[in-house]
Length: 385
Ligand SMILES: Cc1ncc(COP(=O)(O)O)c(C=O)c1O
Image (tube, rainbow, N blue to C red; front, top):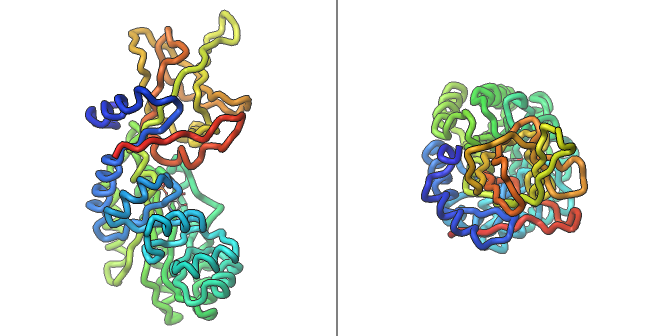
């Protein structure tokens, strides 16, 4: 499994680095971030790459991507402040969250943010008042939640008819109608979901052109996959297919294309190192062996909820005899079970202190880990430059 995910040299670098580190922690290898960025650039040469900072807001990652020329998708004024403090100009950011306080819109506008996502009338009115003259793009609902491992459906976006009305309202209120966005769901395994979404955007462009509003931009969100060791197309296949869909629907159009990758840029750069605290059975005869780790749903592995994301795992104890286990976290919350249906196999002589390395954990782990649940500190993170 490991070989399918990480090159041997990268793996060794991480294992050596982790040897004297207390667990749990995530080790991020910036070389992998760099190569994933170059891979995305090669696959999507027609698109501006806006890194979704929420995936991993580590300053070293942000700096590294800034040096490589990335733009940034921010979700809050806190991400905005962080990036400004790192010397990244507001012009290189897009405020991609459709849920914003008036005061935050005003602050972002003051700081120079000029591009905002929106999906409802009240937000458009707030933008017109507190960020006058800004460029807005409307997020539309898309299909595809069944084929995304981490769906983002329902909560964000609006139907096409409403998107058209909102763009008209934006124009009437003095905002600049700029484009349409969507997100087909994170770790989206079906590339065809972009096809349907792009066709919907084209329909909206055409309807608005009839009202003499000529949109310029399509923001195709994230959703491109990371390698979790299971079957998936590579980034190049995504780029080629999506370019074809764009050509089919927008071949006759001058179009600015944006993507907002998070997971596909940083997940593979991370390895979460954990330790076994306890191994037990509920009765002498029980077939189920429970393995309790020092990391769980609340310590950074929340995407294992519902076993949605199944991280590749490597155990440092070598053994010929393996048996299936149930894996759980360390907190006093019975929700804190990582994997029960998806059975990982571990050595029958697994013991306290053995290390489990969780691969492809560079995205949505540190940023999701709780501050002090059961007293446990947030997940530690180290960078290998
Ligand atoms: C607006 C927006 N853009 C981009 C992303 C990143 O998506 P992914 O990690 O699938 O690339 C997210 C994820 O939640 C998002 O909400």
